[in-house]
Length: 274
Image (cartoon, rainbow, N blue to C red; front, top):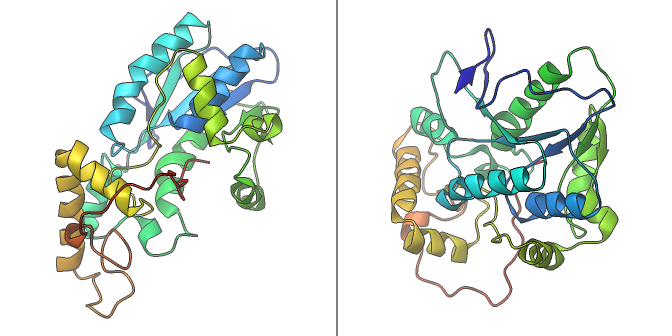
C-alpha cells in the first residue's frame, strides 16, 4: 500500500491515476447496494466515471472485503477505471482502523452517542476520500461527484447539501427514481451478486436482526464488536447503568441481546457513506 508523503492518507493505487482533460466525474463507492447499482446504471447509460473511490475503515464487514475483487473484475470488464481504495491513518495514535481507535480510547463509534453526529463516517470515510480527490485534482476547481443515495433517501441528500459540497454533486439513483429494490434488481440483471449493506461490523446503527445475523454468520467479527463494547463499559467513558448509552445498541448491549427473528421486510440502514 502506498503511503502519501507528508499526509495521513494512503491508497492501494499510485497517486498519479490518470486525470482527464475534461471536468472529471468522480464516484463515491461504499461497495454497498446503492453505489454498485449506480455504477451499473452508469454503464448501461454510457456514462463513464473517471475516478471511483472506496474508503476502507479497516473495520468493514467480511462480505464487503470479499466483494472488492468481484467489483474490480467487473470494472475491468466494462472498461471503467479501477477502484481506488483510500484509508485514514493517524501518525500519532497509529490507529490502522476504526476498531483500533475504539479499543484504544475505550469508546464506541461516534454514532452511538448521537445519530446526527456521524463523526466516525466523516473521519474514516468522507475526509480521506475528499483529501484524495483534492490531491488528484491539483489546481483544478471543476469536477463532478456522484453519490449513491436511492430515491427514498431525500433526507440524507438534504443533510449532505446542508454541509456544503466542494464539487458539482449529483445523486443518479434519485434522478432515475431507483429505490433499493430496483437497485438490487439492476445489479442482479447485470449478473453481479448483490452486495451486503455497507457498514462497519460494530456499527451502532445495526438493527437487532442484523446483529443476530452477524453473530451467526461472522462470529469472529461479532466477538471483536463485543470486545469493543466491553472495553467501553469497563473504561472511564462509561457513565453507569443510568446513562443513555449502554453499549453498541446505544440503549442496550449487543452482548445481552436476546435471539430475535429477521423481519420480512429488511429496513434501510441509518448510516451509510456520503
